Amino acid sequence: MIEPRVRLVRRFQRFTNEYPWTWRPVDVEEFISARISREKPIAISTIRSDGAAIRAFCDYASDARYQWVSVCQRLFGDVPAQICFDWNTAAHVSDYEGRPGRRALTRHELQTLFDTIDDMVSREYAAGSKSWLPIFRDAVAFKTAYAYGLRRREVAKLDLADFGSNPHAPEFGDLGVVYVRWGKANRGGAPKKRSVLTVFPWIVPVLRE
Image (cartoon, rainbow, N blue to C red; front, side):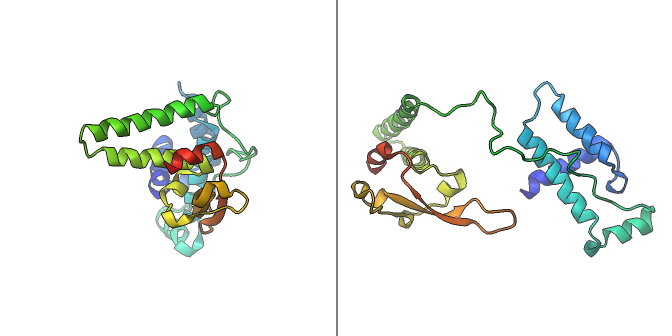
């Protein structure tokens, strides 16, 4: 998170060609307008994250606890201030901000994806290539993410001990539930822990294989 935000703030500084203690709210509006008016406009979520990065930097630079205000006042006769407000940045007003053209994969498309990966594993294994193992790992990761509806980080942090049985679905054995230890955290909070039942039961037998 830190590196992308630093890059964005530096990009904003190059756009304004001004130092932070001379930035104005209108600079944010012009920066966002320039990003939207490109040949390939940025997404609403990106606009909001850009504003959040600039807002966070201004909060830091204008916070008296870090003494930047007094230093800038003494050296430059001006001080940095917050320039991002509700009226010049994008607000998160919708639960879903994806493009309307996007849709979920059909079951046939998913099966084709899984079959393709499985064929890659078989082909590399038959050829004696060592790459079959990481491909097999990825195949299992894709199926696990789909079976339980997990995010990327949640999948990456899983361990075998995180899987357990579901008393309401004993037919799935020890794959009836997964205990997520690295769920998406609230702002400023620690990762959430949650348990996830099998979302798509039809894939569990495939996953077990």
